Image: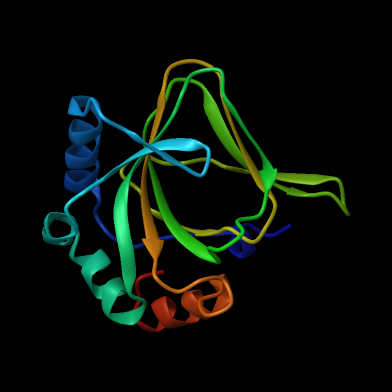
Length: 167
């Protein structure tokens, strides 16, 4: 299992975006269910102003929405592939003791996505993956694209973003 088939690091400075997204998450009282997580939406224009790379990506592949997901402490998200999304963008904002891993059941292999601070990752949602959160609530900035997995698969977006030197 190759890391590049599971995720890619986006070339951008996401520090200001991470600061904004986490501040919004920590200040919000109302969260909404979102595929087994809790979620809030963020103002997409403000996100673009903080991270022009995302605005560029939006011209290549239309972004449906941006937000923050929250996973409660001691939660587990089952091993799965996403039903609709082929690709997403994630950035871990805050956690205490959690991890996201890809799994290859044919080869009995795992691959840990070791999130780095202020770093966004293009995330292949069609490779089996899971999330375990052991301690405090876990906050993740996330981007959802309008096109589904059939119209916007991971490899296709990797090619398009590589041409723009975003990956």
